[in-house]
Every structure is written in C-alpha cells, then in structure tokens.
Length: 231
Image 1 (cartoon, rainbow, N blue to C red):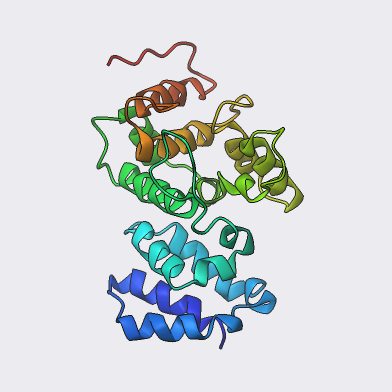
Image 2 (cartoon, rainbow, N blue to C red):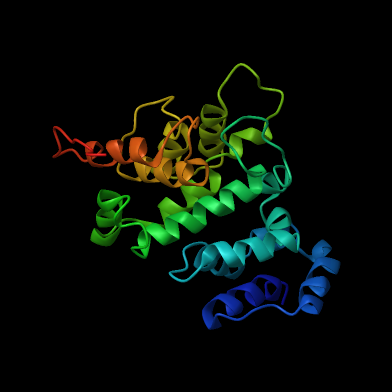
C-alpha cells in the first residue's frame, strides 16, 4: 500500500497528467510513510526506475517529487543536497535542481532535440545503451557533495567511492568519478554524463562546454582512434 505514493507519480508520467496542488499537499503531509521499508520495496523501486528512465519527460516528474519532498525521503542522500547552494561561476542552480536539469537535458538528447549540437551523443543514444545505468549515473553524479567535510578530495571521487560502497554498477561508478575528468573514462556512458552535466551551465566561463564534452564521446568507443569536433 505504501508504494502508492510512488505510484501516483508513475501514473502521472504514464498518462502525462498534471498534479492537483491538493494532491501534492497530501503527499507532503504523509512523508513519514516513506521509510526504510518503502525504500527496500521491490515494486516501489521498479516504479521509481520507470520514472527516472521515462521516454517522456522525467525531469518534470522528478521535480514534482522533489517539490513534494518525496525524492529526498526516498533517496536520503539526495535529501542532503536539496536546496544546497553552489558558490561558483558555472552553476546556476542548487545541487538538486542541477541534477534534475541534467536528467531533463539527457532526455532531450535521447529524443533528438539536440541532434545539431551533439550529433554523436544523439546517435550513441539511438544505437542503444543501458538506459537504467546511464540515468542512474546521472542521478548520482553529484552525490559526493553530501560529504561536506571532505575538502581534500574532489566531489566526483567522493561520489564514486559512495557508489562503490553501495554496490552500484562499475559503469555508474566510473561515470560519477569521471564527470570532471578526475579519472579516465572507460565506457561511452561517462562522456554522455559529462555532456548532460555541462548543458545547464554551458556558457562563457564554464569549466566544460557541451562541445568539449562532445569531443570525448566518440573517443570513448574502443574502435575510434581519432575524433575531431568542428565548431
């Protein structure tokens, strides 16, 4: 019964429905029901992965889940970065909103909305890739920022270690650790995460433009020896 709080968002995604404000308020008032039992519930996790990897507009549903407080309760580490400010010149949003924006843009890439800007990334997505692993990696790519007292190590490496401890797929760990080039990319997933991470802040002064990220995407394929990006 408790997974119905996740099912509400899943149904809204499947049917492409908007939420009545009263419904979201009721969900927020019952957040205490989102506990360890629900987090371990197989059906609840299946529904959440369906939302995360939705071919429609996962960014919209994830934002509604975040606004209602569901996302932070269902994924406690995500709750620690809700409304966390980023004091630098290339992040426009809080950490949680940045992650949701990244997922939004990855969905756009997958649907061909950025084919002229990132043709290689779009083609890789069209050719087929493990969507569950890719979207999970993007959801977790900034999770290292929850460890605020580790000032010696980059958040990407901290996040990679957190993912390893929680038993995440090796490709997820690599994509998290490599999204700022702290380690070498070992699969096409990692540059795709880099590209999606760069899009929300792609402007003059950013640490990485979408074009820079696009350079790395074909090079991650073992059959590619050289790739030039004409800008």
